[in-house]
Length: 269
Image (cartoon, rainbow, N blue to C red; front, top):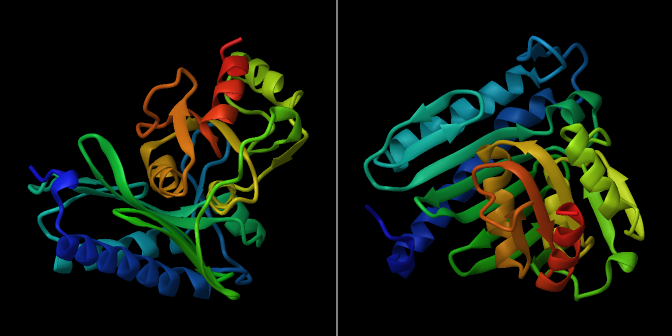
């Protein structure tokens, strides 16, 4: 089993080359469908609305095809096509469109999530927004993002009190009643709370634009790429008990340890 701490520079470069190729392939598969008239979605839930589109499936199929050619020994966990076992001890965790509701609505707040993980969690991550041309990368010695204005280093915001912080979550009706009560304790102390950004909120945290993301009901493919990107930028991501968050569930992402501790105390009551 591969130990990520022992990865050579050459292998790290190979893994990054593969990750960027996956993001490029997903962009090419998705963009023809974005804001296309007549785009429809299937609902994956018997109750509620969890949409999937032809773009989701096409992007994951494109990424899986590349991995079969370039890294056939690695495992894959994808939102749409499930688990493919590997022998290397490394797993690519793929969410072809995180924020399909936003995608259907025409907002550029969805993204492609790509992580590479071992048994301890994510070690490399990409949050890619194809429409705006932004790509946020973290792990294996890198913390960088690129966009229409150029290339930049990723760095989270300096420590500040919660009363000066900007907080994001995707859904106002976060999690269970107990989760909502805990979230409200944080929201009521924050300077500004915004909603509905999906994975783009995590990218903004890594880029130093906001301070906190608090969510519940996540899956591994929702959070593993953001964890790698945010930690590389100097932030911290845990569950609401302060433990590892890479299996999903309730997630607290913060720009720094001080703010994380303040928010965590409120979530725990």
